Length: 94
Image 1: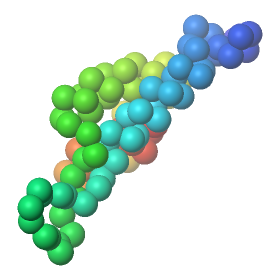
Image 2 (image 1 turned 180 degrees about the vertical axis):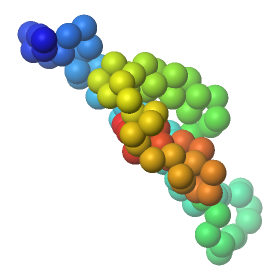
Image 3 (image 1 turned 90 degrees about the vertical axis):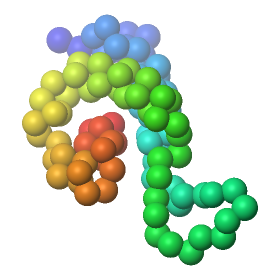
């Protein structure tokens, strides 16, 4: 049963959870690779945040997703994790 009292569903604070998911999406976003002092016209992309930031937020994101989408690891496609970016499945689920 869902308890929608004070912005919570069950025991999840919805505004907090959304804030954490948005933070994860922001740091895991793919952006053009920038090398200081070098002009590069390629198509290489990297994550906006550091690996440490992404991993820390991914841990929170996984806990949120496990609560609201218990089967996300099997129902959200992970095909792009190997070819595009290792966080594609997490981003899609978030």
